[in-house]
Amino acid sequence: MVSVTWLEGFDPSYIFKSKQDFKNWLLSHIDLTYLPAYLPESKLQEFIKKAIDYGFSRVCIPITAISKAKEVIGQTDKLELITFISSFHGNRNTIDEKKQACSSAISLKTSEIEFSPNLSLLTDHPDLFKEEINLLLDMTKQANKQSKVYLEIDKLPDDLIENAIKLSQECSPDYISIFIRLLEEETYDGENLNFSKEWFEKIDKALGKDKKTNLKVYGRIDNFNNLLPILYLATKYGWNFDNFRIGTEYGFDIIDGLDTSQ
Image (tube, rainbow, N blue to C red; front, top):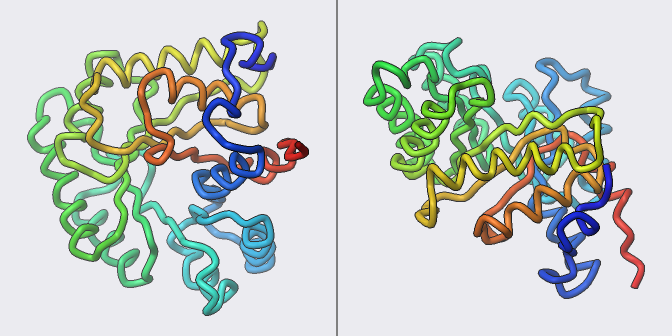
């Protein structure tokens, strides 16, 4: 992909004091994601140790891997753990199953909990959609955990996308997480920038200036040039970088592609 600097005149140096400052922001605002349901212990150890060596602040892993990850981290508290409960497709699990999973995540002392509400409720039962979110948010807030409502809404019509975002914000989670399905191979330079822009416009239409929650963006953000459009669009649509996260499994590649020389 062609650099967004060429396309829109954006450069991270406009925001960050130095390249090292930018790198530090990436390490603290990328939720480094590793989501195979059952991770071999050796692979999990390798991943956790590498994340610590690189200096990442947090990783997002399955709930089944939390206990082993804590053993690898030990007492150093060098890495916070995020987990998701139930399926990312929220309508595959009952609310009781989600509550049980949330309770388990709390007992395992994860720092942040991410969950999907039942999107099938949006059309005819928006009140139940909000009720489900609020039930899980109450559990996470009482446990003093960060909460993220994950909205896998890329295949919904625009009116339901807008409703999902609005209703979620009304419940006051710490973050709303939006999945942007970036293309693995662009057919023209800047295609992913334009595609991402469509999504930021949808988010902005739903929230406008009334951004009461933080935003997390997921997607196949697999290299530094794929990251820049996301950061540019975040600034363009009024998101404070303190309140913005990136979810990706390619965090190591992004950091490796960052030139920190002055």
